[in-house]
Length: 140
Image (cartoon, rainbow, N blue to C red; front, side, top):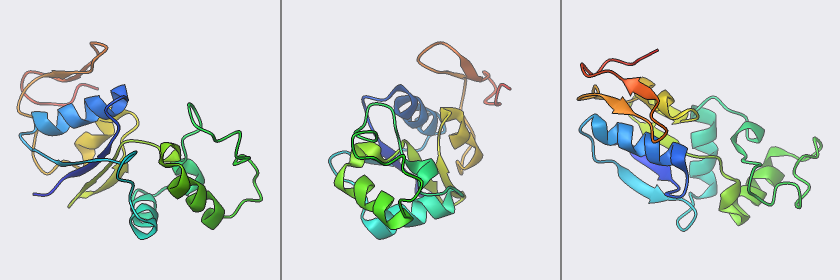
């Protein structure tokens, strides 16, 4: 059971997602994508397999998005991918890859849809929001 998370330890959503993976008893492969970004083919596959457009996978907040003029609707996917690869902070996070699928886990509890093992107990996000009850069931 292989689970890979493209993680930014400075991001609360990414930390919550990683903690839910571990709450399922899984120790994932953690790729800190800011220092070890995916290659173009991997990034394209993750975006496609998550059911997103390239534009939907770009992070705007706290990035050089505006300075690079990436809001221009005339920019092609290839140009957007070039920018994401040149500036990995533009890759929205966290992406999680499992045998059950790929998701951009925003919000973090989206990861529960693709984990190959159930939650082993209660889980609350860093802000205290309950996500999983003591029986390991998702709180809706």
